[in-house]
Length: 186
Picture 1: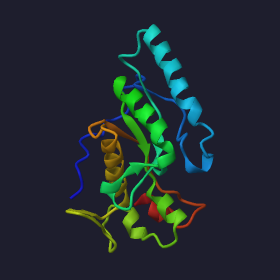
Picture 2: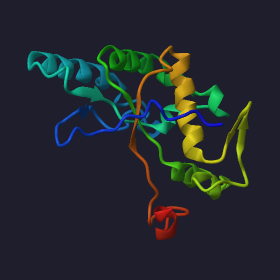
Picture 3: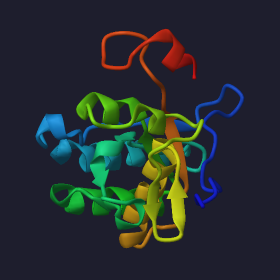
Picture 4: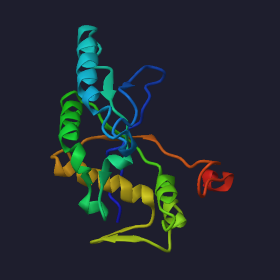
């Protein structure tokens, strides 16, 4: 049983700015930590600007993270990557203290792209012949498993009830393993 998506909130306020993204996926493994030292100072500076402009109650700062910021063999074992523990603790604390959600970009196709053994049917919402069993929970698609892995990672930091926004999700039509129009439409 997958946890309900009760913590997902929608971005957009009828044309008004509701969130400002500070960077995009700055903690990607491929960046080797080169942007980590800039995230919290940038957020602090922007937050001060929002406060001075009396907009902090209306506009929230977020840092869209890629799902590679956390890991786990099964969703309930989810944790942020060890080298990100300190920065993620600071980030999540900052987000929480300012009423901001955690924004995550979940791309199930990246699992297939990074592992030729990954079962493609697990990447979609149509069920799978390769479910992931985690205690009493059965995951039939990568999105649900990934989402619950994030919840477990946040919970381990004491923020299991933090609102989560899905920033990006999708499937490519070309240029990668399994990338085609039919899969993207699904």
